[in-house]
Image (tube, rainbow, N blue to C red):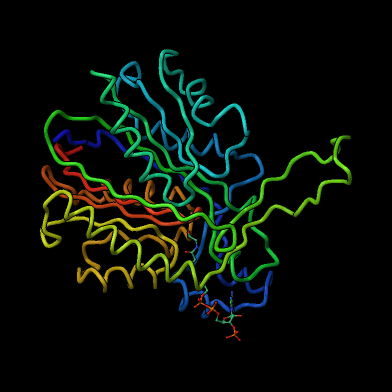
Length: 327
Ligand code: UT7
């Protein structure tokens, strides 16, 4: 079966940390409540001068390292907070990273499941690009679409970016599982457009941009779908869960990760958990966590890795692969 190898990873987190204590002066909450209910101690907020593109570029440059940029044939960016509707983040990365022009550059919107979906998308598309590698990213500027009067959401979200350069291999192991269940009620952020269209009978009803969410419902959806999706992914690959060395779950709430871990009967020792210092950065959580995992020096050649995420859409996605070399 065609496998997948990570050749390089990188991430970027803005320096400014919004702590739980700071949030106490913004909304009616307590640092203790946030820590107990979410496992988050702080989340990073991008400066006014930063953009989704600047964070993506910083993460991508680290991931590329000494890899020949001319070998990149594909850029897949997962984001729900691009700087522009068009041009895409991927096209702007082609310019800023000075990548060759005969590439495919695409953005995908699967919210928090985006990076895992980008991995699958790249793995599939690389089949038609022999000799080329792919740059995949998860990048979000969530604090620009966060409503800081809503204590049920503003305590969760942060900014950041993660990237990886991946190669499709003729042998190896790769397996994927995903799902979608359309719902505006569970989790949404409405798009805003210009309202001066003279052909409308009345001014368009513009809702302030901001993430809205039914937290408890998403919580239940997350534990159930992620644990079942991991089981299906491993069954598809014929792999026993006990032999998987590394698990990366979407970092949305520490209690959700604990719930998935319990349902799967695995130990948290095998999970990369960094939610305490990053909060929920949507598509960037798995991307940053993958970089943290590789930089920890714990990944050895032949290690089995699972990444699983859930989020707006609603969507979920799980990828399993064996890392074919040390980086
Ligand atoms: O990336 C994917 C998208 N998002 C998620 O995955 C989020 C999934 N959901 C969650 O993480 C959790 O549901 C939340 C963190 C959003 C909320 O935690 P919870 O344990 O589900 O709390 P709850 O909604 O059951 O609320 C319990 C209480 C309520 O008060 P009452 O009605 O019991 O008096 C809330 O009003 O906690 C209250 N509450 C807060 N209290 C202090 C809600 N938010 C806060 C807050 N500070 N920030």
